[in-house]
Length: 285
Image (cartoon, rainbow, N blue to C red; front, side, top):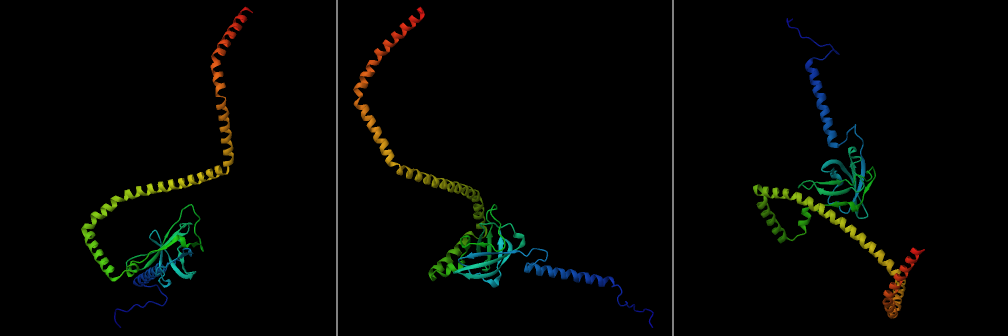
């Protein structure tokens, strides 16, 4: 037998250090794979099950149920489109939202179907309503008046004739040459400088909208006032007639009024003499 004898590990004994390291690495790889699969399917075992909100749109814009299009809030992936049904000529989307979005969407939320990239993949962008509104919960609906679908550019182009499409391609090519590359940087800088102006314009339009509301209220109040005056026109006519009669009587007595006014100075003088005599009599007494 050789002087170097092979050492055999008894069954059930401890693993050598290399074997333990391999097992730990395999476990870490398995956990990473499980996390990757959960991330893709958006199914986290320690997170709530989420909730479903339905949105009614007049035009789904090419959205398919098999695509499981993403639902985003402020550009952040927040759910999936799990179903599309057709009711009364409109599309009803079932939006499965993540548990973390609970309390962030309120009454007045708007849903917009728009392309995510130039590849034509669509997403449903949700714009939260006012924070003081009621929070959306499972089973709530977003009405058709609060939804919109963007029209793909290809659909717009398909409605044009061949000559128009050709001229449109030439126009796009010329625009690309005009604003592309280094030439587009000054244009982008100019657009950024316009941003404060747009914010001021937003404030002005908000004030104008408020002024328009006040004008509408003023017109309403004037309408009520004139309606009331119209109902009281008979009383006003009687009042005006009485005032006219009073003035007529005063005009007929104008001669008497003139004689009375002319006699007032003598009357006042006699009154002063009488008052003086009374004062002298009072002194004697």
